[in-house]
Image 1: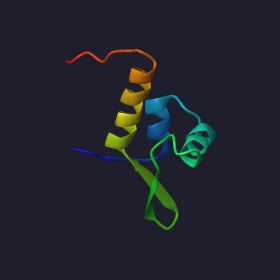
Image 2: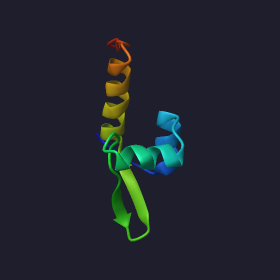
Image 3: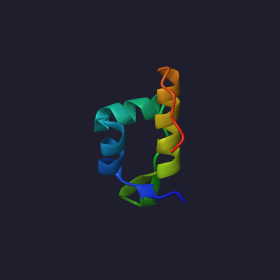
Image 4: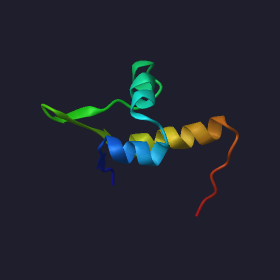
Length: 66
């Protein structure tokens, strides 16, 4: 089940800085955030996890089944 992740969690999960996340979003290379409220955004955890898996695949790393 997907969760809503706020920026600190996205940074923790990806190792990216705030500016890198927003630069990649602008370049359409990272999942877009969505508004939770007028002043609060979040990311869908499944989309961030898929981005991470795609990055590993692109780097030639194979994810092993648990």
